[in-house]
Amino acid sequence: MPLKKKILVTGGAGFIGSNLVDRLIKKGNRVFVFDNLSSGKMEFIEQHLEKPDFTLIKGDLLDHDAIERACKGTDLVFHVAANPDVKLGASDTKVHFDQNILATYNLLEAMRKTGTRKIAFTSTSTVYGEASIMPTPENYGPLIPISLYGASKLACEALITSYSHTFEMQAWIFRFANIVGPHSTHGVTVDFIKKLKDNPLKLEILGDGKQEKSYLHVSECVNSIIFAIEKSNEEVNIFNIGSEDTISATGIGKVVMEEMGLSDVEFIYTGGSRGWKGDVPRMRLDIEKLKSIGWKPAYTSEKSIRDTTRVLLTGN
Ligand code: NAD
Image 1: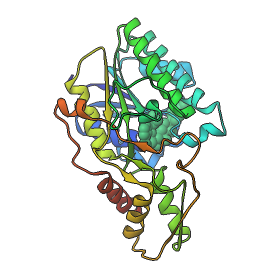
Image 2: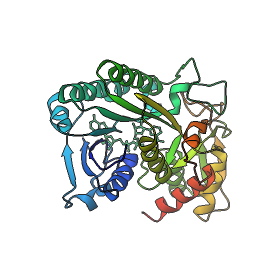
Image 3: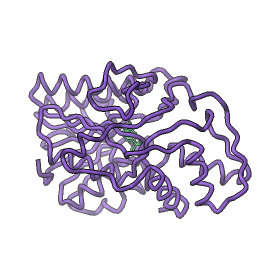
Image 4: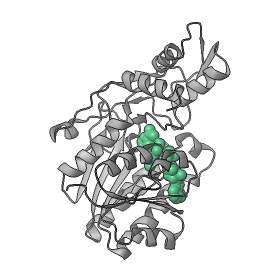
């Protein structure tokens, strides 16, 4: 499906959403951002505010009327808005239910009522839980998430696939590895930079530092999802989105330390194999399906982390 459309991006002022919006505008689409600015930032989208092909709708997905109004006349919705903080579920059991499941239900209802037929959803590797097959393919099962965040995203996927079937919609579900890059406001790289700015002699690393995960640069993430939508046309299209290798938490600490020009940093581990309750210590996604349609990442996990650190340090 060529992307020259009226596109609604929920969460378009956030980290991944704003990078996606940049690309969609560059491709000549008419883009509407729907965002409550809870973690999104005006500075990420302000360069578009005066453009005729861009509209910012300040609204909340928990407001039925607002999202229904926003859906009217759109060809495709990128549903990016969510609460993405995996750790939070251990202390707040309602946030992912409201911001992810209920918000997605509200959006799907708005789409059903307005006849909006196509949805692309930013899901996550955490739906797999602690997968016994690595790299993990899309058809891995059973899916047993271990965080409330992962559970909420799996519930969203299920709502989206069942709405697609019942109401003749079409869906693209993207299960992301860890995404990094410009506009990152959370995650391990942001956390390490902050900690080392506060104290350049010590770095606290959650867990034993041996957690091995895949990281993908947001520019590649955005390229791959647009590519996948253009190249696939099933009723439900599910793709893993990640790099082909991993980096450890200690490895990330070393990259951040080097990029900050520090050489004498003591790494202090909080201990245990996982960083927090619900953390999946090993994650690498099988991206053969994405490769089979002709897309391949150019960056390794380390390069993505290094570039992100540079960009965040120079304030870009
Ligand atoms: P983010 O917090 O930067 O972006 C979320 C955006 O959604 C923000 O702009 C926020 O203001 C908006 N939002 C939140 N709740 C809303 C609501 N109720 N109504 C309207 N807007 C709302 O997060 P991100 O890292 O850019 O993540 C984007 C998406 O990708 C999320 O769905 C997340 O679960 C998913 N994801 C992210 C990663 C990652 O590594 N960053 C990995 C896997 C999946």
